[in-house]
Image (cartoon, rainbow, N blue to C red; front, side, top):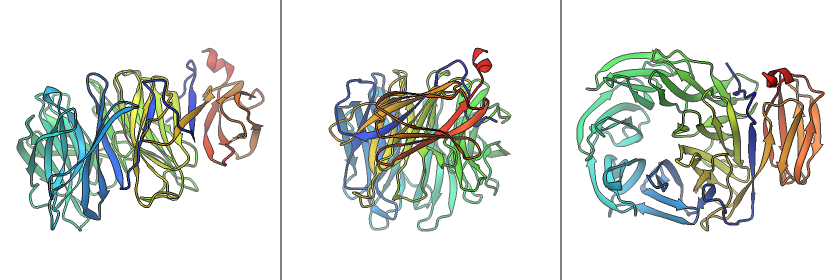
Length: 498
């Protein structure tokens, strides 16, 4: 198993971002947009239409105050051309979970609706046009359950929607698993249930012959390990198998080829302090795993994004997103970074980037975009200025992982500096606005082997005297005492030549 992907023939860069004063983006393929509102909001899903416009959905409100729920919809044409709406229907409150490109250039929204006084949730299928207007909607009760806790879907070849997730009776936290098939018009065709102990289905695929539904999750067999549970298309339970990866709190699976599954999950390392990393590997149809690659900083909690955290359009360009320095609190009093990266077809790192450090950031969903880049729907919370109200941020990256600029809806700009090559050999190069920052490099025994005061522009750090074939931990401390950490591998010249 590999701690990180190794690249010996490709220059790898790490991009770190500090928050500076606002200016406008000069690159239409790279920008950030911060939507600041006096309520608690989160984006859960994002898609791209045929002309490169992005549409996202989520909801505002607090889970213990369901009367405040409002569905959120966003349209992003560029950094300066955006539209957002809160959607409810008279006394009906809504939550939006998923958005699907639909017929006639419209969109299908999967979510929930509820009404006073009890606010028992029902499944909602809504149709939106490109201006985020609701064209129509349908509602269905899922048996007598009062809350829909999680919702995911896969699409059938006939444009049918195969919905699955978790349902419960408020306020009882115990959950049951449900499946539901809808046609393209949003009509329910069948529904099924499964009743073990709190099952969680995070991701799903059709089997290669489309006769089975593979649900990837946990607790389907009263155990916490990762599992693949198989149902037939009539929702009859067929089998359960353990998969070779940790899965809490999320797992993503995508068909990478006709016989290979791209699988992303969470790995918790047993160290003196908790150390989580994103794990990504390939599985065959029998669930045999290739070498698992891990992405994150040493002795830091680096978790996958809360929803879709791996995606690709080109098999040689696999994107991932997560949270660097995760804290176990809805409204943390510390800082974090949105972590993202690009991998090649062997899961080797092409670049890795960290954005944030001035507040607490979380990644929800990443989407590989048609221009060769990616976009992340995320959240931002600053306990200094916000009272339990998370804002929504969208980060659009170009094809080389850069991001610049901001829309008028936000107040901050991200500026990056580069760290490369990684892996490397004789030197490390740091470039950017870095005056007043310090660089320290530690060996595996925790001893400082390099310490450099950085200047603006290029900073060349010789590593000729360091041991080949070892990982080193680097720490960059800026003038505001914000700290960035990561790993650097020194390889031998022989490895680079081969």
